[in-house]
Image (cartoon, rainbow, N blue to C red; front, side, top):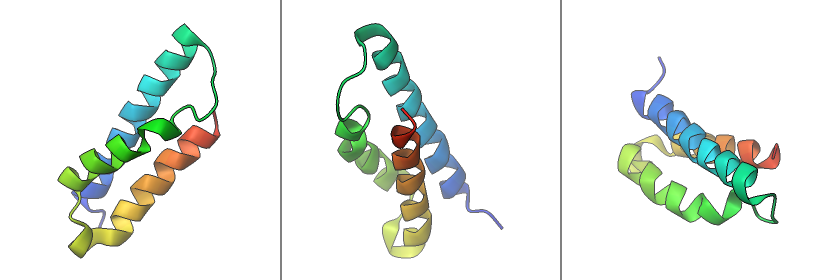
Length: 72
């Protein structure tokens, strides 16, 4: 069974990624594109996923976001 927090976390990652893509398209590519928002992403993810109970899901979402950033 997939945790609902995991699904919401992945959607949050895609939301942040889309924001970065829009920034790239308007302002151009720059170094650390997407990675500068990772702290904000983690803060928002903390509100969705309780790390004490679902740390694995939390890590999956963070890894998913960093993989999306790597593809830029």
